[in-house]
Image (cartoon, rainbow, N blue to C red):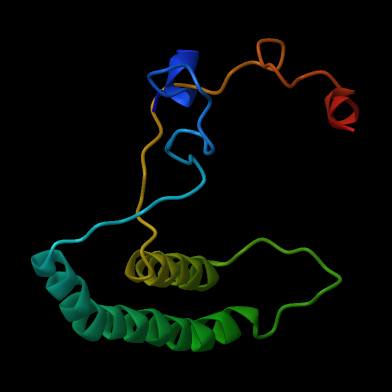
Length: 134
């Protein structure tokens, strides 16, 4: 988006100033203009696809509850013990169920290419960076 650069747009042809500023695009307002076909698609998907996705996400949460309960049965809060094979299996099943739940909710798996920047190369690596905001 480009704003007008010349100052002549605020003046009429004879050099008198106009009452109002020239129209420009507000970067904080996003106006959507849908065609009738797009509106029909949105209405159809709202009525059909959204409830199905909501039911799948709710079902996955209800399905995860017994597995989480099963994984926590017999665990002690004070002692740390290694996970046995069946608890690892339940943990993997829970991860799959939660992955399906988030996928049904619209969160998809994204692969990240590259590698994380070193702290010395980061622009916000200084310990006093939050103080600069204040």
